Length: 152
Image (cartoon, rainbow, N blue to C red):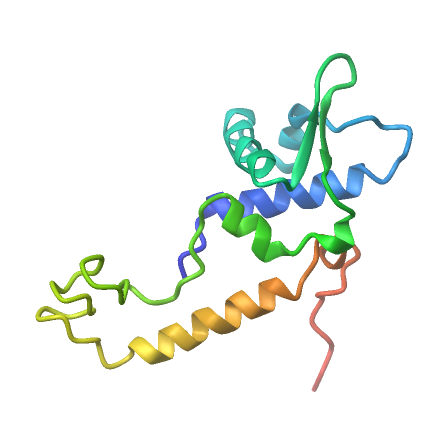
């Protein structure tokens, strides 16, 4: 799966924002505070939050006490939306099966335009990952509802 640091850091920062936005007395959360708590680069967070704001996932506040707030409640923000907002494809395949966009000239994984033998496997995995992340909200993340169960 192609989930780079961009997608992971965006989810980490949004979870931090969600956790620290619950206090109604806090007008907004400063990116510098998120960067310090999560040990992330402030410049990198600024780039990510520009994209998150453009996609309507956060709102910015200027001036004293400025920073960011979630555009919607944490239980309405799916993790998949965050990852996709920072331009991260949720694909497990190594190719793009659209003509002219893949390694093969006719749009397949292999030279000659044919799909590799495992293409459907990786495509199905990517679909499962997308579905899983679509079913997980920021609220699930910050409330710890994703901890593995202690099964035998």
